[in-house]
Structures are given as C-alpha cells and as structure tokens.
Length: 324
Length: 295
Image (cartoon, rainbow over all chains, first blue to last red):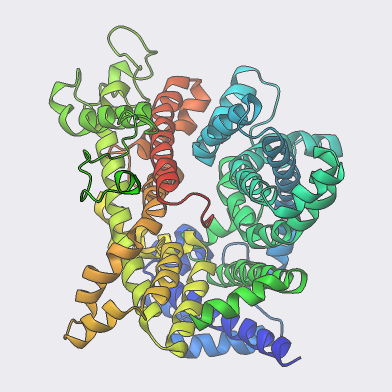
C-alpha cells in the first residue's frame, strides 16, 4: 500500500516538474505568440496595441506568476484557449485525438501482433534460410527513415499508380467508412514498418534465449513437439517481457505518428503538436506536452508494475543489483 | 627395471605450441559494409574537387531534368546537379552524424558517471530528471534550442541533436559505473588524489566503453536520420546548405511534378549509409558480448 502511494506521488511530482519545464522552455524560447493569435496583423500593431494584447493573453507578467496562474486554472480544468484556433484547448485536442488514437492504436496492435508472429517464425527456423532472409529484410527496413518510406509510398501508390490517396483522413467530397480506411492504408503502413523489425528482432532474441532453458529439454524428453513446447511453455514465459515491452513502447509508437501525420497531412495530435510548437501556441502546447509526458511516465510505470507482479525474479534481480 | 621406466631427466624440452585459429582477418567482419563506408567517406570528404558540376550552382534553365548523360542523377527543382549535390551534401550529413554523436556521448558519459558515483539520493534525483527529460517531446526541445542558437547551420544542428539524445546512453553508463565504483583500483586512484575526471577518463571509461560502443555507433545512425528528418520538415538546414535532408525537403515539389529522381537518389544514399553503419554496429555488438542486454 505504501508502495502504491509512493508511486502515485512520484507520478504527480514528475508530471508537475514536466509541466514546469515545458512551460519555462516554451516561454523562454524567442518567437512571437501573438503571431499565432492575430496572424499577420501583428506586424501592423502599434506598441500600445501590442501591450494591450499581451495583457489580455496574460503574457506581460513574469514567468513564475504566469505559471502560477496557469496551474490555478488547470486545477479547475480550464487549460485556456488555443491562440491559433480560438477555441478551448481541450476541444481542439479532443477533436484531433481520435485520429491519432486510430492511427497509433491500430498501428500498435498490428506492430506487436506481427512482431510476435515474425519473431516466432524466425526463432522456429533459427539460422535457416527463412530466418536469414527475414533478418536481412528486417534490417534493411529498420534503416529506412520514416519520412523517406512515406515519400516512396506516395510516389509509387499515389503518383505513379494512382490507387491510394496521399493526404488527409478522408476525401473532401465524401466521408464514408471505406473512404477513411482507404486514407489510412499508407500512413498505417509507415507506422507499422517503421517499428516492426525493432520489436520483432527483440522478440526473436528473447525466444532464442528462452528455448535454451533446461525445462525445454525436459519437455522435449517428455515427447512434446517443437511447436507444442513453443506455444505451451516458452510463449507463456515470454508474456511478461512481451507486455512490458508493449507498455514501454506506447509513447514510442505514438511519437512515431508525428512524422507520419505531418507527411500525410493527417489531422492528428502529432501534426497539431508540430504546429503549436512552431507557432508558439502556448496553451495548446502545454496540454499536448503534458499528455505525451503522462503517456511516457505511465507506460514506464505500467511496465515496471507488470514485471514485478508477473515475474518476481525481476524484483529479486533489482535488489541484488542495488546491493552490489 | 623400474628405474628404466621412471628416470628423472629434467624438464622435457618441447617447442612451444600455441593454438592458432585458422581464420582470415576479414572473416566475421562486415566487409561489404566497411568497404562501402570507406568509399562513401573518401568520396564525400576528398572527392569534392573532382565533382562533374558545381553543386551549389543553380542553373535556372535546366531545372527538373531527368537522369541522363549530362546529369547522372538529374537536376532538382532549382537546377542543381543531384549527383554532385549528393557527395557535397554527404559531407555535411556525415559530419553532423559524427559531431552530434560526440556531443551526446560526452554528455552521457559525464551525467552517467556523476549519477553512478553519487550517493543514493542524488542518483535517484538525476535519473528521475533524465526520465522527465525523456518525456518531453523531442520536437519541442529541438525547436526551442534552434530558437536559442539562431539560424540553423550544421554546427547548431549537431548541438541540438546531441543535446536531445544523450539520455539512453547515460542510463547504461550509470549502471556500469555503479558496478565498477567499489572496485579497489578506483578506490586506490581516488586515495592517490585522482580527481573526478582523471578517474573517469583513466579508470572508468576504458571499462565501460565496450558496453556503450554499440549504442554510440547506432547514435551516429540516428543523428543522421534526425538531421534529415528535421531538414525535411523544414526546421533543420535551409535549402542553401546542401545535405541529404535539405535535398529531400524539395520532395513536396518533386511529388507534384513527378520528378522521382529528386526523392529517390538522395534517399538511396541515405538508406545505404544507415544500413552500412547498422552492419558495423551489429558486428561490434556481437564481438563485445554474445547475448548481453538488448538495450
């Protein structure tokens, strides 16, 4: 119980620190936030008008006071308005969130499903031609930067063959389910390809480590087939590390959607974050950073909790480690 | 009779026999990847004077020409020769990769060693802060640093990439240092008055360098990717400073006009380089430790 309270405390302190860091960083960086609120009109403003505008947005006070104000409002659930969209920040984010969740979520499930499959195929045929081919192809795909693979896919499927759309989440004229799926194909391919081999290779090596354990020999002596041993015994032992890998990589894969969303002009969180950081849309930026920070911290905590709960060996190892 | 069998004659002189492995030096080495890297580096750093065209010259009349005899890889939307640009820009991209890696490794070693040598509380604090830094979106940090450092050039980009990517190496260094710090020789060096940097450089680094070597090589790879991605998105190097990334930032125009060569050739060089670096990195990992930590 004490441990849980400790964890929650650590979580809140981390989020608080994170929010302050982001706040300070974004305010200290040069650049004009008024630009995102008023657009090009800023250049024609008189100093008096500027001062008024800054006062209205609360930008004239020292950073610490600004942060205090922000915290007070945030505690009431009021995160301010987006300078660019002139809308409540939460509304702007909620509007875009589903797109990223669909792209990242399905991408996440696909990546891990395929990674487990590929890892198993490779491990079953270790050092035979099928494993070697998959390893070579995998290494090559892991070397291709996400933006370039996106460009190549657009070039091949949208420009040359003209079968798949290259941007947006749906067509301007129609907005049906099939149309949306159609628009999701290319971005999804990039999200999955960008991460697949990294995880598949990890899982492959974990399985290879596992099948060298003594209990596998016993199972084999008992007369079980290779597949039975793999499915019934090895995979079960692998599950904790598989789940904790999944938890750690949630932010990794969600972060990977940033570039994809920008290249494909997909209206999700990533594109929003990129714009808000470039155009100093402070309130929006804060919420997005805190959101992504929370996913990172939560992901790590979940991974740790899973490890400790399912596999007590890890805790023992940690204790051992500290004593050294 | 017995004496005949067990006569003590002293030590029997035998020629010393050592086990020689009959393995040629190039075995297990990723020869192809190493050769390609050598060619690439020498081409990019020494071959500039021998380029067929001036890579910076914008021939307005000859923009968007398909690959052919005059322009091996065609020209871009501003009429520059892509073949020359690739070698010229490769120098910038590779330098950024190496410089950024040096910066991030230096930060990682210092932070990791401080955290590893510090007491329990300071250690926890430093590691928590590192984790929080990891939680800040990279994009924000990059834009912030760029804003401080002014208009982007290769050096500021290297600094930006280096400063934002030291955390994972620092974690490994810390773990290693925590295991090493109670060794007698460290204690001896401290007692003889060796200061922090002396001990770090002469005693700690040689011991953990092998376990971070793989990560360092991979850092070169991710720094090159970071540069090209940033330049591609328009927050890295501007068009006038030629690098593989800034060449690819023209790709939106190229997609509209269907000039595939503007996208394909720099990308192929980029991916090829990354692949070679990965092969070398994997070789280092295999040599250093068979089946060690995955991180």
